[in-house]
Structure formats: structure tokens, C-alpha cells
Amino acid sequence: MRALRFAIVMVVVFGSIAAFATDARVESMGKSARFIMDDISIFDNPANTSLYPNFLIGELGVYSGEVEPGANHDPWNPWFGGLFSLDIGGSKSLSIGGVLGRKDERLLKYFPDYIFSSAGLLNGEATLVTDLPVTNFDGFLGATFGSIATGLHIYIAHQDGITNSGRMTNEAFASALQLDGGVNVEISSDYQFEVSGGVARIQYGPSDHALFDSDLFSGFASARFFKRISAIEGHLIPVASFRMMNAPGRSETDINVGMGVDTKFERGFFWLGLTGFYNVQKAGSNWSMTDSGTVFKDLDDGGWGTGSKARLQQVGGIISFGIERNLWWDWFVMRVGGQKVIAYADYKASEDAPMSILCPSAPEHPCNENGNYFVTNPVNDGTNNDNVGFGFGVNIEERLKVDFTVSEDFPFRNPFQGGGRLINKISATYSF
Image 1 (cartoon, rainbow, N blue to C red):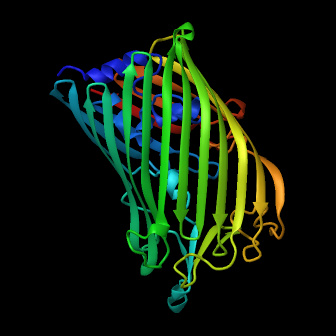
Image 2 (cartoon, one colour):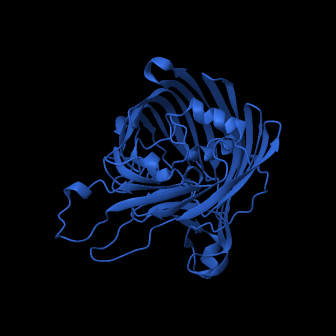
Image 3 (cartoon, rainbow, N blue to C red):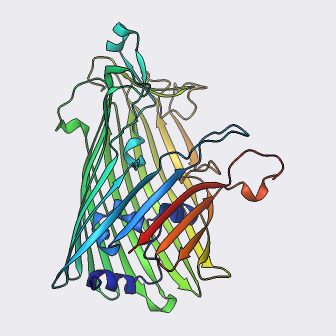
């Protein structure tokens, strides 16, 4: 079957970028796919499914949790899936795909660690560990019409009626739903534009809410533009995004505007980006921070809480970069990248929530008054939010690609001491 016209054109236009890559690649070379065209972008804009026809994708999981020296643990949160396309002639195609087991942290980060329920006092289970969603499904449907690609995406993560320990109870509930769509337009061989947007619904705790409860709905949108610059064999890339997220007892508004550039060189690729952001979060009195984690209290008030809310407002910027290059052999690539966040924070305390999850000093010290301070991202906690990343990849005949994120302390570790981990993440794709 002949290749899709749209996919061919886009690979030619963005030939400096690997057509098939992985989440491990993104984490290793800059921590973000905001300025690069990568298969992970299908979760930001489902129209990009048309750029990756007929491939399988998977991740062995992440190995970033705490493990005792000499002990072993399977990696956390593995997932897998695939995309399949059918050429229907006339420069048109249809795509369908699915991913199983992926945790969308942009939604699940609003889940508390524990849920306290007044109804649970009757059966001795006032505090429950928040349920782990078990459905965790991404579904994709896409179509191309000449130089225009469109796509739809649905995400479902749900658990109800049973705790993580296996105890059946009506107090256990956690749910995250998302529906979004996007368009990717090839304006010419030098210009490409994409835009996407959607809605989400986040709920947890025992309170019963209608499916279309407007107070639980969130909205988001993003756009980016690629302009080819022949002088550097790369692109100028302006980006913008907006997210207004709502969940029981808390909310977050996030606005990002940035500019990036990429370029290819002999056997390699480099990108650099600068992003400015405005972020404001609010949390009610039913949210608190303890030594064990975040606690959400549902006290027969629908989960909305009472009294005033704490507010954390941040204005700042992110500078990030990534570089990769083939070394020694064409099938072996090394990567490195990093990011630095500097933001000015303004915290408005709530008399009703001195141990608010937004309080920068909780749970060691309460926040009883307003304050201003600067914040930055973690230095080396092994997540996508920290400063630097390092990794390598293996490319077998441009079909099977396996990417590895290396633990940041690996070059400094004493090999005779034991303990620790060598690899944080392993991802792979296979195209056919």
C-alpha cells in the first residue's frame, strides 16, 4: 500500500526530526515535546496520528520510586498500544488506534493521596487511599484530506466501589475523563500549523455528582507553528497553550507562550526553547498536606469545602534544550538535555487551611500569612520536572527503535557499593 501523501510531506518537511521516537527520548533531551514533532505529540494533538501510520508503541515503565539497597522491584506504570492507517485513495486516509495502561499525569496529578469521608466513620474507614484507576485507555480516530489531518482522542481512567486493598465500599471512587480533537495543516513546504483543544472531567471521593456537572469540567487548548529556516536547516517554532482545570475543592489556570528553534547537523539534531507562563492555583479548606501526603476531605458538602481558599500565583519562564547525535554507528544515538524554571510566587493564605497543599512549608510549618518568594524546578529527583536528562537509543533498520533514559547519578556511582538503578525508563516503537 502506497504511503500516505500527508505523512510523506510531513516527514520531508520535518526531516530533521525522527519520525518515530518515544517518551524516553523526550525525557532524555529536554524534558518536553513542546518544540519538537514527536510521536508523543499524539497525546497533545490527535491529528498527529496521521504522521505515524502503522506503528506499535510501548513503555516498560518508569523506575523512579524508592527501592531498598539490594532489593528489586518491577518498573512502575508500563503501557502499550498501536496506531493503524488505511489509505482510501484520493490523498485520503483513515487512522485508528489505542493505548492501554497509560497514566495521564496532567489529569491524575489532581487526585489526592488519601480521601477522608464522614460517611466512612460509620464503618471505621474514615480515611482511604485514593483508588488507582484501572481502565486507563486512550482511543484515537484520525483522518487526512490531502494536506489537512484531523483527529479525535478519548481518555478514560476510572475505579469505583473497591479499595486498592480489595475491600468493597461505596466510599471508593476516582475518575478522570477527557475528550479532545485537533487539526494539523500543511500550509506549504515551508509552513505547518496545528491546533488542538478539549474538555475533561475529574472526580474523586464518595459524593455523587451528575456526569455533566459543570463545576467538574475543565477546558484546554494549544497551538504551534513551524516555519522552515533554510539558513540553519531548521525551524522557528512559536507555541501557545491554555488550561483551565477544575476538580472537587481545587482549580488551576495555566497559560504558556513560547518560542523555539531547531536545527539539524551532521548525524545530529538540536533544539532550544524559551517559554513564559502564568499559573494560578486555588485549594479549599478540604485539602491539606500531611507527612503521608495530600488529604482530601469530603464532609457531606459535595467535596467543595467551606470557608476561604488558599491561592498560589506564579509568573515565570522556562529555558530548555535538547541534543542528540549518532555516535560510532548509525544505529546508536546519544542524547542529553535540560530545563531551568525561574518563577516569582505570590501565596495568599487561608485561615481555614493553614496546612493547605499549596502552602510551600507544609506540613512542617503552617502558612498563616501571605508571602512572596522565588521558585525553581527540582535539581535531580528523577522526574520530567528536574534539571537535566541523559540517555541513548538503538535504531534497528529504521523499524525497531528502543530508547533508554539513564539515571542521572549513574556516572558518579560507586560500582562496588550496590543498590540504586542504572536506567529510569525504557520505551520502544516498531513501525511496519
